[in-house]
Image (cartoon, rainbow over all chains, first blue to last red; front, side):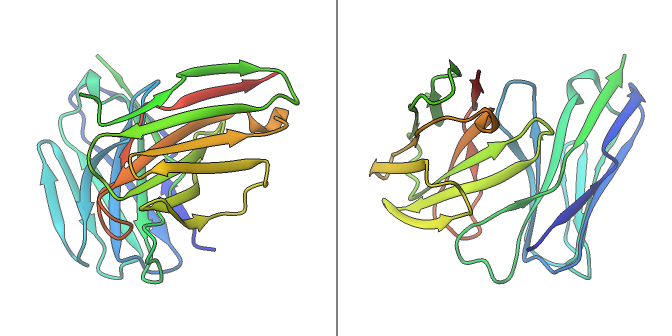
Length: 113
Length: 113
């Protein structure tokens, strides 16, 4: 089945630093989504991407839908302590007409004040 | 005015018991989902219902049975609980089953002893 490889698995950075994480797949996706999960909470959508090449920002967050439709990245600029959490990429494939999302393994981000 | 709510938040039970987790969404969405997040934080879809009709049924033991009394509710019943069922279970909903954003509930942490 379809799988997403997300990297890095974890990051420990200093407050103020920029962060980059990415997801790759062996098959193409029609939609890429980035979610953040805080401890004890459910994932919350950060950015949704619907077209190859699309670059979308949400505050300090920027995400891009790769041209090949097989990858996506998320950048966080000037990190702050509340950025701590687990970031998940998720994709919907072209064969999916049921809303089925495939999730990456997650990137755990820790920010040192 | 919680969008997607789940009860209970925590559930501790003995092996062999039967338990239920309830989910309700007040967003007027047509589609609801159940996900399982394992100890490594990997999120995997289990079921999806659209207007009370089952549309996704992943390879899940038949001890798990979703029930949707109406499109605002999707409950998860688990029979004969096993140790490996311990996980966090998330309910989610979306406007329809296609490319719409999925909104997640806060999760139910199930611990089977």
